[in-house]
Length: 438
Image (cartoon, rainbow, N blue to C red):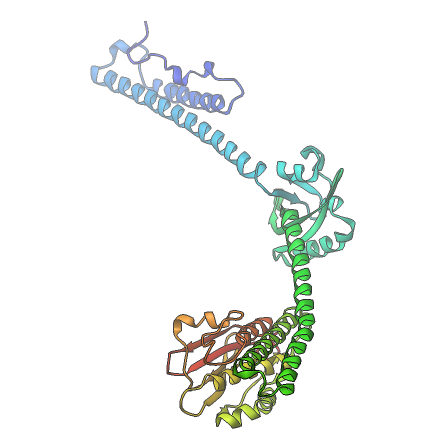
């Protein structure tokens, strides 16, 4: 007969587990420890349990039950741990092998130590054949130097590297990828490179398509605006000749129509010139900026606006202005448009315009302040749009000036905005890089 409380526990029976499983080994070790403890404790007990006092027997039985429960709990914990490991393996498979990007682990010489399934599919080879091969084997020959330069910089500095290059795939054209690489410690502490490779072929094609279409549209717009100017001049000239040849003979209505025709043609011509300027700025090359004295640029601006300043009775003052990294011709155009607008949109008092600049973290902050009619804050962004005008009938203009200013300021890496209230004047502000920071 089995002693009371000594019933077998299937959950902890090592005979039901595979001999080589981690769980079986753990249970076996636990069983050995339990047997050793039982033998140790049995040494202090008489062979005949019947001579034990009832209290001692109860304590022994209680301890056996406690050990049995402990074993059951440990066995359950082992089963739960095993289940969690299985879930972790599945999650690892999903996150690593089935990721939408290729993962590579490279040795210091650049040999592939590990790669996920996506990387293998990306290169069109079996994953097993990638190991020990140099990643450079799959880089397009024309981009090999770029790959080696970034890998060298990564190993020498330890700073993460990111770059774009083309890779090759068997029986397929080269494709564009974005590489993000960093260093880490591998097995045994040896340095390794972790690289994430993203296929950007589609985005590259879309980018090239957009650039091609943009260039074509810009060329078409340039040709259209340029070629339309000559017919418009003919319209203006012939209408003016008509008015001169038949003075007083066309009647009041005829002369009015001729005046409207000339005015409309001149307005279109002004719009075309403004559009040409905008297109020329948009296609400016990326030549480096040079130190430009803003005081000289403002002097040139006031000289070109001398007639408008005299006729309006405007007063233009300025603080000492800095030297900035800029294209002087563009800076003069910015000042011309902003000062010219302050004169154009003046109030009842004579225009008073002041130009100043202060040093800020991003370079220089310029302000062009006036005492004109002002702008509703709700229209502060609207006025910088192409062909956007708030006073179309009252004041002549093309609606391109402020759009040109924004384009030129942004070409210098700055930003432009306006602070104003209706009837309280306006202050146009823009930033430019300080000398030596562009």
